[in-house]
Length: 395
Image (cartoon, rainbow, N blue to C red; front, side, top):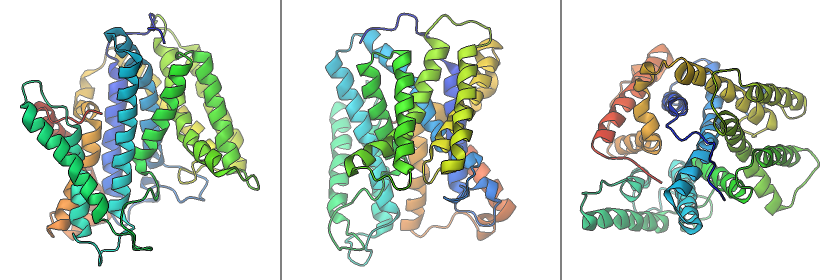
């Protein structure tokens, strides 16, 4: 793969802003999920509802942003002089880490037999959520090498021990299972599949468009009634569902930045916005809009909405140079994995030690919504502190 000479090589603040906003909304809706008596438009839509809310857009926005970052990540490593072996070692480690963390999170949530486990499930969950922090923390250069290895390998040993301390609810067997891959795991699979293809085609725009078409066809086939795919093909098609959003982000990123940047209307991007919405609405009568089922209508409409949002941010921040407002969201953009994990650490810590921070009054209705908003803001300020002290997860 060659260096993309025309790819914009400066920091794209509008991508960071979209990432930060997405993470802030994610923290808000995750906290809101535990609040009773909130409007349906502030929740995930039921699987068969043929509709979506802004909550159903958070996950695809994550995938879209992952895709937008891929061309820059590969180009930066090629410019740095990294060999293919170094690049692929890093890529595989990142994908594997996301998959592992995702599976541990899912098993912490449900599927265990509390009566047979040696440690309480809440304490198991606390360790499962906490150990990625010492394992994947980006330690400063002046940090003690010995202490770094103790923390990293100690965390790995704890995760291994947690595997053998887990007792499955239905079978009584030892060990965690991928009941489903979790949000991080799904991101890991979609990222891995997409970057492998991106590398093989050397990041060519036309080839990525072809890949997106294949992803949508595979997703459609996988959900077509009466069409039973082989298990291995169904597995791939299932992950191509989410890879379609990564591919969409890559395509939009290339259309914006793999060329000379001009302050004019980007007609190819406008064309893809129309295409995303057209495909989404065309397929809607056949599959419906459903995040839970992962329908092609949901993926394509989400890609269209994400592209519109990014185009607005690009115009506001790169063209009009209105960037100061985004400082509020940047702590999350700089440390996305940690801010995703941290609420879970807090939750299981409180559960393990029977601590009740928030009165029941703030667990429902308008007070609950306000609390979720306050909690999200607090998390951003906590991230700012963590970033200052070099506590940053880096996969």
